[in-house]
Amino acid sequence: MPNVEVAPRSRKDISKLAFEIRKILGLQNVLYIDVLKLVENILPQIWDDYCFDVCPREEMGDNHGLSINHTIQIREDVYDGAEVGEGRDRLTIIHELGHLLMHSNAPKALARGKVITYKDPEWQATAFAGEFLMPQHLVINMNDYEIACECGVSLPAAKYQLSKIKKIERS
Image (cartoon, helix red, strand yellow):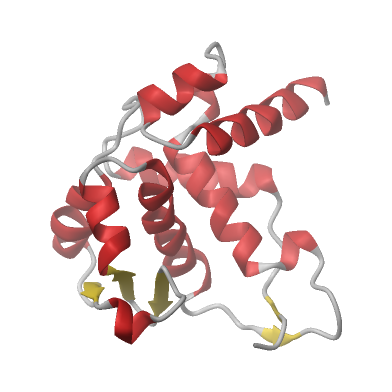
């Protein structure tokens, strides 16, 4: 697949977007978000042409999730993992939501060589997922283990998000 780049976004901008979406949904002070309830029940009520599909592994192949137009497609094993609270799978679903919110109608360009991080749609969607599921204002005084448990994410994701929060604090 060729390298694609989108309009630049800083982590700070992505964090603001994640907070605004949480605020619109009335989730600004909620630590653990029921991601399946969000994508299956809440978003269809407020987004007219939004669709959420669970697809067989045979159809999705190596893709855990895809965002096409206003549709999120999630591989069935990822859905099953999210259903039982698997952190990585919950993050995957919100990663795809990040793509929909930031990239559905956004112009994209083929990049020559490596894409600069802040123009990389995959980095942006991953940053959105981290900021949405582990917002700084709620996890600032927690350690990585507490973040993983309270926010329902993997320990590596919690460690990564905490490192980004500490980096922001130092700057």
